[in-house]
Length: 203
Image (cartoon, rainbow, N blue to C red; front, side, top):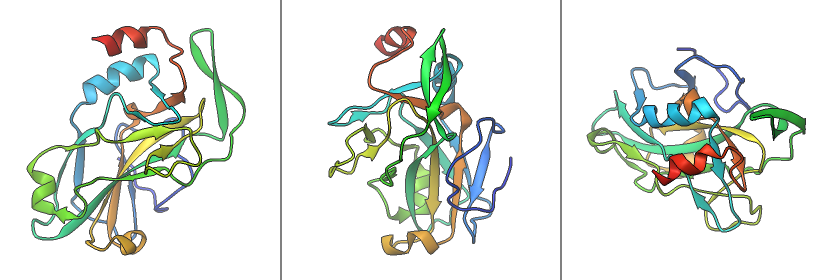
């Protein structure tokens, strides 16, 4: 477990420990998060996870299913999912591998998704797994539907933010803790490059 002082660093390194925690100052000591469907993510990660993005928006597969603990039962929290660009380049698929292929394109600031249950009490968030099955990814930079805007052929690392506040206008300044699960890293694509993905998704 590694702690990083910068609450919103522009990117994450390629190689990270199993469970990287990125704290906001002030942080939320004692708060923990677990990726419940980590075996499914690891299955994809071994191949090289790809996420389809479309103009109208495509749901993530796999989606993220996370359980949290250590929250105050009566306090209110907001939960967000952010897509953090990995590296400063775009990628191409060559010889069954993703390799760097030139400089990165400008990134949209619209890369965060507020879980629709936010804000809710700590008791609510801890009562069951937090599922991000409504997240949609798009390459439409003019999107007005609240989808996460990504650039094709770029790598991203999902990052979970747990923020203690009931006021959405105070999100950047409220106590929070962020969690990264390295096995959820993916490449955004408009069509799958690894053919085995067709087989895995059809199962």
